Image (cartoon, rainbow, N blue to C red; front, side):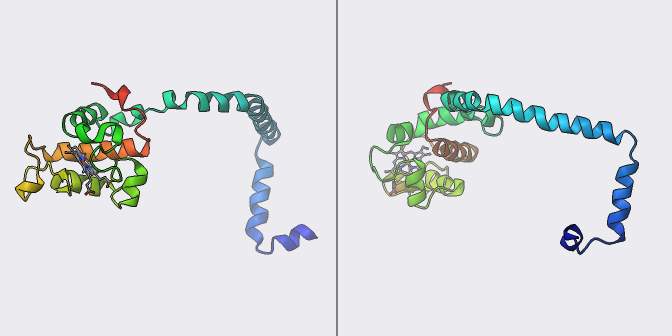
Length: 177
Ligand code: HEC
């Protein structure tokens, strides 16, 4: 009685569906396999979960460097560009000139520049005492006296900085070229 009242929307469709299910040949065997599959992984996970979790925690800095993302952005090239143009002031994502404007996520967020486009814009045109590196950066006084960077390189740098910020600048040393 209860079941029927719990499924008020059940009409003729429902009964035809359940009839189909009953007619599946070997339905009992399938049920048995499904039951096994249901039980075994659970037992496996129950015994394996604690050591697995421990291993993941213990090795996470090793297991999760940005290696998997290296296909989407060229980490090596990003790291090389960063070393050439940015590391002088932003070693390990810091800021030796302006401590409140590091490339760490919390500063980027607080300063409202954690979006890749914002990082690109600052890198291109500069900001305050940070020189711009874009080929058409103006005015001159706001731009680097050193070599300018190609547009694609600035895009790559923005993606690189964003990625590093998201990952806490943990793998800077391992990204050597
Ligand atoms: C001469 C030192 C210097 C160099 C070289 C330099 N920066 Fe900066 N950078 C600064 C300073 C200073 C600021 C703070 C600017 C401000 O907010 O007024 C800054 C800010 C930033 C910010 C915003 C950080 C925040 O939390 O607000 C980003 C992003 C950034 N720099 C990226 C780069 C990149 C990428 C490069 C290399 C292409 C680079 N910088 C090279 C000095 C430098």
